[in-house]
Length: 191
Image (cartoon, rainbow, N blue to C red):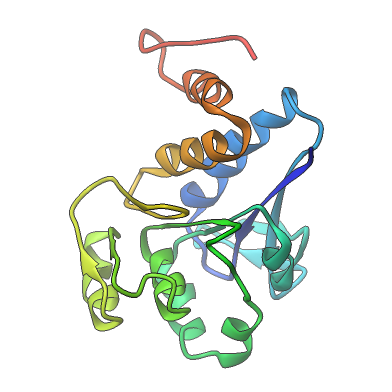
């Protein structure tokens, strides 16, 4: 059965919070050719905060049919989007059937979409006031999970990726993928 994971990008996205999940999530394809990972955005190409111009695989509305959707981070890029009704309006997400996650400042998007109403989240320390202004209670944990909604903090992309893989491809696959990126001496498996 095919599964699609979309990583939502925008100009000035944070490289590590996009490309570490991209790498980990794509390792599932070595086991399952029905697994697909797509970078999506509102333009054909987006440029990271470090200046890497990156082609997108689809538009924002692709998120609505995906099995899992991850919002990457990057305060400089996210802040103007929180007031962009057309950009926000492209999303019609359903946590009843989709896993929806965010990295650091990316939590502001599900918050703005009302998906974090009444829930806690975590984010990068400098983004705490932003999420609090959106009515979100911040918890200082690497990752917070509420059913099919998760928020990961700074450098917790591996936790978020593991959560998605476990939820859509099973615990054994998720554990194997995580083990494949651990530093030498902390575990390693051949994929």
